[in-house]
Amino acid sequence: MEYLTLHNGFKVPVVGMGANTFGKVNHDFYGALDNDTKELIWAYENGYRLIDTAIVYRNETVIAKSIKDAHLNRKDVMVTSKIPTKELPLEDDEKIEAMIQSSINIFGGYVDIYLIHHPSTDEINLKVWKALESHYLKGHFKAIGVSNFSKEQLDYIMKYANIKPMMNQIESNPANWQQELISYCKAYDIVPVAWGPLDPVPNKDILTTIGNHYGKTWAQILLRHQIQKGVVVIPKSHNKLRQFENINIFDFTLSLEDMRKIEE
Image (cartoon, rainbow, N blue to C red):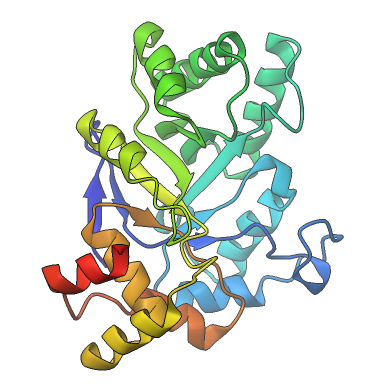
């Protein structure tokens, strides 16, 4: 595994597991929880140590259970969770605090990485950010950041923040590279994290051709491309073999020419 260092010195794996449909009936995002941890245990066996969840995924308890079921120590698994500002409007400080404290309690007294899930108004974004700062300073979070924030929304947070965001989790894939936003984040030492890094993919033929040269799948090529750009990736798979393939991307380096072809 390779790691990126956040501006506070905290190191994060460059490949994690997106977990929004784990522990749910038929892997349906809106499905009832079945508390099945088998596929998460596969992920740990395959070497994943960064698991991405959120309050609105409703499966934080499943992630916590999976760590115990895998007989791992809590400190051995890095958990990202997120507080909603879009799906569950935050009317007051008490509601913000209750949701944050719920995540902290579920994961044994701390959450490794805690993000604002979606931007709201500048005022609400800042109110929630101040709450994250407070818990970070208390040691309840090892890193704090945002998700789906634009340059302008980041600008507002950084103008008034005591601690600037350490991560911005955004959609990044061939249909929406968001290179300008990625470059902006990196310029301000904010690590970009790609959700949905493998979907949609309109140019699989090009990726497959490049992959044949390296003995890799098109998905491995695409994930390697992103981490070479300094982006953390959180692909999702319920298939044990694909989980392994998605993390088995550290034994080759894409040439500059192949990097260019992928972005064309």
